[in-house]
Image (tube, rainbow, N blue to C red; front, side, top):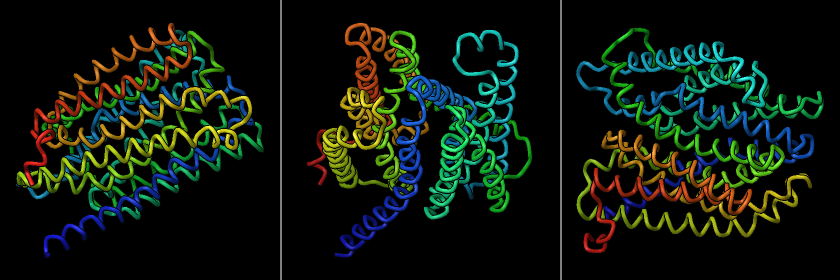
Length: 430
């Protein structure tokens, strides 16, 4: 009876945390989602296409500038208290790596300006802005992640909500009232990132989580942990960027914009699974080191139940989206419904992946993730090229789904290699 009460209490706390993280993420995702009626009515599909390419490059750049330091810092948080380890100095060295990478990328942009201006439909000033904004994100993400693992969902939610609300308010004012094109959305992002960079630094210093002191050992440790994570994370955002570039190259900027509307809508599935994972991860890491055979069996049962709920919710989402699109977006963007099925299914597989990848992070076997990233990026190039030739624009969505499914299976397989679980015999463990 005591164990049942304990399990119920843990489940109740998990659901409470999930709901709070979901609330924060809902604001994080839903307010830009609310911007869709504005963007799809005040911007042309071509403008939305340029914005989509900017956001795709921005996504890749955030991963490169971060260089896995955030994941390394989060993992190091659980080493606080170990003899000789100074977490605040570890954080400082991680942020130093981010700054050095940002400066290096700015140098590459300056030296290669003629080339980058020619191949990208984005003015050079906005190209330079991308690594600077990525550095802002790398810095202020550290306190938000620490709030998650310190089980403080309220400041996490308030911080993210404030950031997004400022970003969206600025974008709406600039586009609707000041008649900016896609640049209005970008400038809204830029101002909010710089403002919350200052807020993030304040919290890091206030909580004593950052202390200036260079340490070669810490830098080496962060890069050893973070570089494979970077390859893996970059794989995800590169996959998200590849589809835009293939569409722009073979179909046109207008269809790229329409596709991006569908992608943004289906990403709501990622918001829900991400909110749950944010609440689940601290519990998972705490419990995994002491699981009995029966505990492993229950964890597997829980995981399969989660997979079922994700897929069932995705099917419901697919049926509802066409009606939502009719209300939400401008008439020029209604073609987005053609991509919904494959993109929604792909994000369902991504949501399932977020649960099984935790085993690899726990065991610090992040080199596996780098190999998976290399394979899936290669698969993305090949499948996008083949399927867009065979099925036209919808082939890009099919390629994205195929890649997400492949990554989920690979990470699940290798996660079981590094931390064996009774995936096919879980009933025997009870």
